Every structure is written in C-alpha cells, then in structure tokens.
Length: 179
Image (cartoon, rainbow, N blue to C red; front, side):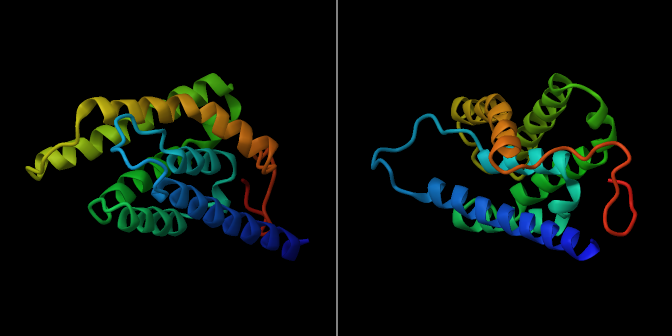
C-alpha cells in the first residue's frame, strides 16, 4: 500500500512537471508576430496554487522552485525573482491548507486571489525597488485579473480531468502523517 501511494505521488509530480512544460511551451509559441497587448492568464501560477491546496505533498517546494525558475529562464524574466515570489505564495497557501479544506470554494478563491494579486504586486515592487523599468500597468493588471478569473476553470480541470481532489479530513499518507 505504501509503495502504491509513493508511486501515485511521483506520478502526479511527473504530471505537474509535464503540465508545466506544456504551459511554458504554449507561452513560448509564436502564435502571432504582432506584439501582445493583452496577455493571457498565468495558468502555471493557477495550477501551482490549485495543486498546493488540493494535495500539497504532490508539489514540494523544491519542485515548484525548479519549474518556475525554468520558466524564468525561458521567458527571459529576471532569474529567480518570480520563482521566489511564487514559492512564497505557495508556501503561504500550504500553511492554510487545513483551514481552506473546511471552507467553501468561494473562500478559497478569495484567499488565492489575494495571494495572486500580492504576488503580482511584489513583482512590480521588486522592479521599482531595483530602479528597473516597470512593465506597463494595464497589461500586468490584465494578466493578474485574468489569472484570478481563470482559477475556477483551473480547479475544475484539475478535479475533473486530472482527478486531483482535496484530501479528506483524517486522511493519512503512507507514513501515517495526516494530509
């Protein structure tokens, strides 16, 4: 039984990496040669937060950091800045998993929206603190708002297509640790 749970955990970790790779690949595709005026939502951020709240043992901190750092390198963002911000947001949510397990989806969505907006604000603040040119506010806000609005769809896809659900109260992992 313990071996099957460990196998499932590693399979979901591999699925997270594959999903992240697919989302990064889609983001890098040159679909249109014109510059993007209104970027789409950051689906990797949405999936990361949804997975952290559903099954935190499937997405350890090191895995999140490595995936987002790879995204930083490939999208030519300052290396590590967005990775640290996402990791801090994910760990903040990881600490509230038990609380968010007991409340409804609207409370979860509100908490995730606040953390997502804080992540986007921290990114802009870091740019301002380093006296770097700030990205335009309107597209950055549209990306943040789109990510918040896409979160319910991400959760639905996570639950329905990938079978990732919240751990039930009293559920334990292979070592007997409560989830």
